Image (cartoon, rainbow, N blue to C red; front, side, top):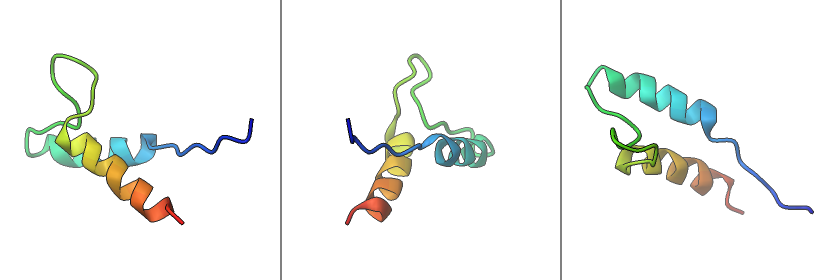
Length: 51
């Protein structure tokens, strides 16, 4: 279909591991949705990939 994708997994895992030391997470504790930290990871990656 020609639809591009971006794998955010490694960036999210890396940031999640870093934040664990601060007792922070990239997702909400009661659901699997990203919180502001997770959204910031996606934001950085998408900003780099934009033409």
